[in-house]
Amino acid sequence: MSVIVKIPSPLAKRLTIASVQTRRSPDSITRTALAEHLSYLEWRAKAVDEGFASGTRDGWLNSETVMKNFAKRQAAFVKKKRPKAA
Image 1: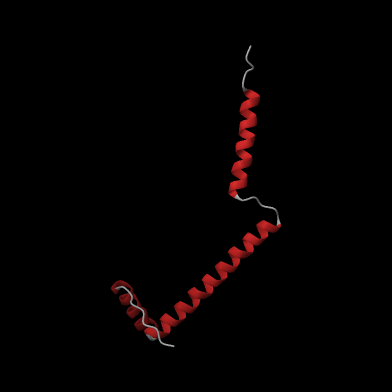
Image 2 (image 1 turned 60 degrees about the horizontal axis):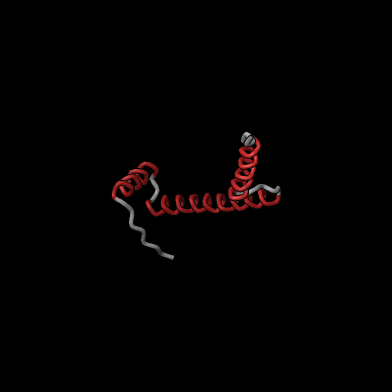
């Protein structure tokens, strides 16, 4: 499979320098960098999914539920602190 990617000039210069320094072709460096970054993105997506599954399984509350509970407690607190009319 062949893909054409346009990269900005400063990045192309860095790739050229890295290619000379490492004695590797720009294609080789690009393929390695892309493979490593895709592996990271796949790992990250899996970790996030596992984190959400763990939260659901362990009974974590979403922010909407937390805010509703807070509002109820705050209203009860304010009602309790209000002086009674004479």
